[in-house]
Length: 193
Image (cartoon, rainbow, N blue to C red; front, side, top):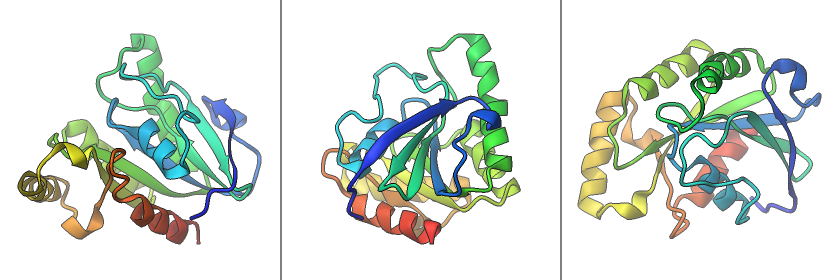
């Protein structure tokens, strides 16, 4: 994918604030601090289009980024541990579920999992939601440069077993080496049709 243009369009907390456009959308979701913003910036070849932070929970709205004037990449709030007020965190589940269940433009969700962590109850719940709403899912293992080759293989086996997804279902991504960038773009393009 050649990214000619990428621009932030708007933030939304509900359907009445989503962009009114027929363009297809691919959304990104994962545990807080899994590297969502870093992955999106890496795919786009930008350093800071999507704000990154060492503090979990910075993304508190649904953020829409228009790519090549043709489709949207959508940054959803992270789940799990987040340094956000409790009242804000309580709003995330209905916000995310509403988007996943009702957005007809949604073509796929990229579910990010940190290769160094075993998927927890929230990760499995997210997979269940995506299956419930019949949203095509692209699972991506992030931070693969932080583990050795042998450890990577063992972790992929564990994650595959816990999620009940085949090893082949996963793409691997490193923001340092850019490993996986083309593979993820191929999968995004296939999802968008």
